[in-house]
Image (cartoon, rainbow, N blue to C red; front, top):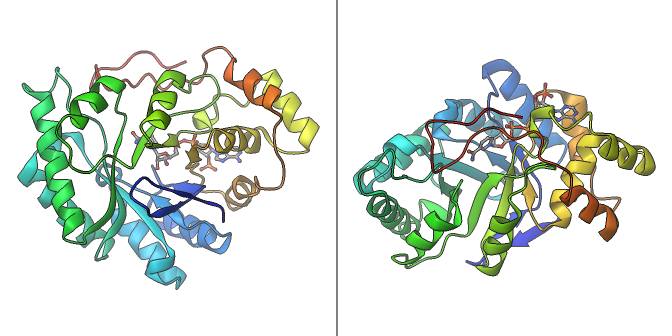
Length: 283
Ligand SMILES: NC(=O)c1ccc[n+]([C@@H]2O[C@H](COP(=O)([O-])OP(=O)(O)OC[C@H]3O[C@@H](n4cnc5c(N)ncnc54)[C@H](OP(=O)(O)O)[C@@H]3O)[C@@H](O)[C@H]2O)c1
């Protein structure tokens, strides 16, 4: 598995496995199969309600803990210094693990849901820095942070976020934010890299899939990778789990990457960090 190096020196697999909506029985089976197929990065969150399932699936796989890369996230209703410390302890208990490799602020506090959102994010981050110091977390990062949230956070951080996990797929890839994260040496992870299937009917993506004898899903994942962005596709289907891993034997040309960049907006989830919990209509 190809890896990237984070700004804190830790390495991270270049492809991950999403677990949103991975439920009890099929979740465990999917995780077992993903491990067999070579996935090592598993992305969960307290909010997904499946940390026990993910932890159990990984224990059953028999792969040593140190060979796995586990991400979980603090939910936006648990932000704050003391709350974050408690939230991580609960996550570790559910996962039955001593540490996570990456802990993310799932959504930033924003001016609609916290009276002093900058302070709330800063205090959450301070707790995460201390938890990292204590060895309960290897790397710390954020998710769904716009530049405004990042800039405010960077004013008070001792340790810079290693990752920003954002919605990123053809038709909605937040290019300015992606470039800004790169300039700041913050690695981008792509959530919903397949737009939950909403880009599969695009004629250009289908044309590229035919050209490379790959699927549209593989083209989307490869495109993210060529942006130095880590895709974390989710699937409960054995065949698709294997298919999504098989993206390291072909490369899109620069022209094709640019053409995908320029596809019109499609597949947008409707979720935006500065208006959350409200949302826009999805494409
Ligand atoms: N930080 C955040 O706020 C945030 C938000 C959303 C998601 N995430 C993370 O990102 C992960 C991935 O995003 P996502 O689950 O929203 O969406 P996604 O990975 O873009 O799409 C998942 C959907 O695509 C289908 N699929 C997967 N591979 C396929 C293939 N090769 N061919 C056809 N269909 C395929 C899956 O169906 P089957 O399962 O039936 O195969 C599932 O319905 C999540 O699981 C979660 O870990 C994070």
